Length: 470
Ligand code: FAD
Ligand code: SF4
Image (cartoon, rainbow, N blue to C red; front, side):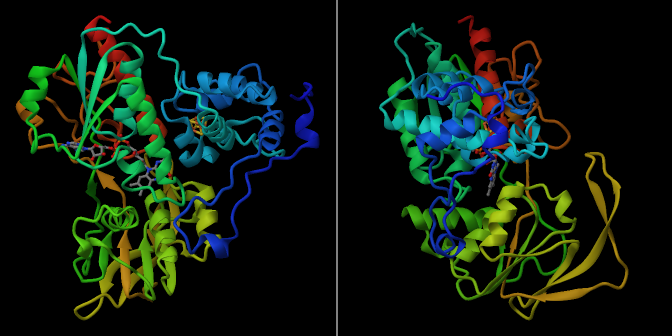
């Protein structure tokens, strides 16, 4: 327990948890940060200024009660901190690990102005990991069970957020997923060096104890009809994500040696976890010259996976400058430390090679006027073509909505980009154009973040409770 000192931030600087040496970590698929020790977590939490109107809370998409749980950690009261952090977030230990905090809570921290923001994400992770290790479980003793049940399609962060709200209010959720484990992209996408797979296994056990039922390895629309779910359940939530990989539309993308980012990452996870169905799906880039195209979180994960597989070189080419990269700055820094070479302001125009990949033709760009999202547009510099030698190319240009072909039959309408229409501020939060069906996460907002998917799932859960009159 620390005595209150409002000027702690002057004496104690920002200190992130210790990171494994780049040389060691770039050979293993394991988390790279060591956990905080109790005194470190308390000292870092104590740096919080307790601003009257905490910007960090507003910038956090789930509006966590950040200064309050930081105070509880300062006092050594971890179980109460865990209880409080679960009031707003269904997966705090995951968000603490993978949120791009520099753009969210920590970016908005008052101390992020020369003193160094409070290490909010690492403390959030510390609270839940420590509480679980101490045997803490969400308190379900006050729940009054109703006779209502809801089918949730998708065990990603959106589906899990929705199921968490429902079960805590006495409505039985049954979560269907085509994959053999829960988590969606948390398990089959984000690699172990950012999020250890045991984190979701532990969370699954906790959710099951709370009363959430998982039916895994079941694809809705193939193994079970959507009609059956609509008939058997009082409402349905869709949290099915976005899975159509974007392509560059340039020549050579079909050459052997060109890989889609998510296929490459999922096959690697399956290989590591022993879930491999088709051994041929696994791609090892050992000993190869690899070029990764893209600048988001997916591209960083591909870069760092290739490094761990023992690639000879990994070069990441991105068409804007470093300032305008969409990914988390922390992950770009980690990739660089692990040996990834970045080439900014390079736009691919073709993959070249005779019968297999031999290189990527790129042109140089310079930054022009901002686009509709405020990010500066890249403009091609004439006569700047060059070929980057490569044995393998990974394309990580992001994802487009992938609505199921059967949505139409159930009156589930989409917007012009293929996202499911489910407004946050409609009659019931996140209700689709079919009153019994709700939706949230990437399939509604387009590919985004874990924390925004959790938020939408939770809000949709509230919408379903209102709709059911619970
Ligand atoms: P998903 O996580 O995609 O889950 C959807 C689930 O629905 C899947 O499990 C799928 O199997 C299931 N499903 C779909 N159709 C059916 C069906 N017919 N029947 C049964 N099940 C079905 N975000 C961050 O905040 N930080 C990061 O560091 C980060 N890194 C990322 C790295 C990669 C490689 C990728 C691809 C994304 C990353 N993201 C990151 C984004 C984040 O993972 C997503 O925004 C988030 O997972 C979306 O959650 P969701 O629940 O909407 O969808
Ligand atoms: Fe920050 Fe994400 Fe945690 Fe919110 S959920 S406090 S944005 S790490």
